[in-house]
Length: 160
View 1 (cartoon, rainbow, N blue to C red):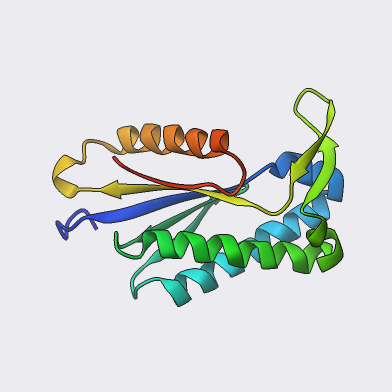
View 2 (tube, helix red, strand yellow):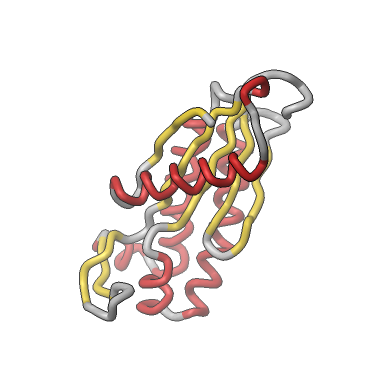
């Protein structure tokens, strides 16, 4: 995409509260959610994206999508919707309908967590302004933290 010289978008998708989810529903369900998420996101990219768009699994509960700038937010919203459906297939629609679950936070305290949300940080890349892969990674991490800070299921867009 850099070589083509046209702007493009890289979306960094992360499952919200995944550790608490895995602790509550078990690691087998968490593994199944990752597998279902991959399939759901792939379907969303094919349905909402352009030919040549790319979906990758970075690892754990993180995914990356490369798309054109015009379709990136539409693809991200389709991914979030398809992801929620995938979680429903794993834990059941009744559990999904509650929209929250009680789990332990990272300090071991019980609290309510939103259920089945995917936060997405979309970075618009202007090839002429691209510096390094390391800088891109830093910016993606900053934007992901901002999305998480705003709340589960947030989709935000910024330039690299």
